[in-house]
Length: 366
Image (tube, rainbow, N blue to C red):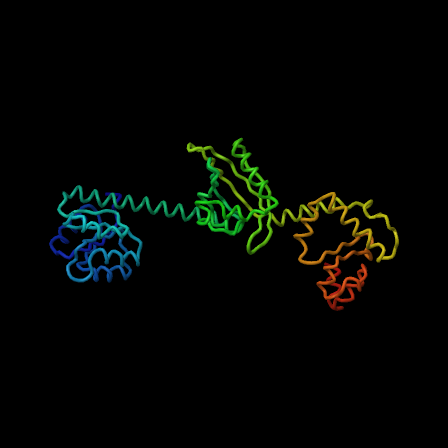
């Protein structure tokens, strides 16, 4: 009796004698039973503070709402297991219950032991369902708190691929929904930067062939956030159908990559770099060596150009930190401010004179 202690059942039965007999059987097994003889009365009962652990519903309730409509209305108020009860076993009668989530169909007149066993099975199924729902809810909350996408990626022998599982945060890294890539990974792959696409595909193929862990930094171009750097790590698993399934994690590492590129720029610039070929103290003349130096740095370290492109919105300026009065500004810098480039010198005073005096010290400090 321990598994039924304190469990309550709402019995909805229009026949008074059957309701009385059924109630006695259930109470003898340890259940607490509340009886309603009409669908309207059952709704009235559950609309208050009483919420039953299980609803035992007769399908044919005479005049008024029938059992299936009553069950549907109750489920709209409370998610509880429903077991249908009927003296009929005709297919058309049973079919009336198929649109409603139920945990059993009991034909009236069965021996008490079979009847009570059916009720216990319904409770066991409900407990199992509830545990699954709670587990899925916990998993969803955990996935949402991870700052990246947890996923499974599957690659088939025919070259097709999909994400059979992806956390909701795949929206952050690819700006696609899990539903959009569950059958076809194409929407995610179309986000990959054209310059990195072949690199990504080659790395996946290599991991597939060797079954070694996949790890890669690559760029995507997103509809709303533009160009971003992603870092992916996954472990492959060979499946029986010839496909390979990766279990992995992808995160946005744009800020980290920009910081790494900035460090690369700093390492490339040494005191020797500032000797140039022009040593004039005239800022206009010195501007030439800064432009040449920038070009040389980009040739020596192409990643510097990526850093400049991602870090600048429009114009680019380049400043000699050892000679603060020496700067070089590209044409777009002056055009952005509304000036013709030929009318401006590569002199810090040129742009400093355009800043409001109250804001100049803040700008220089930044």
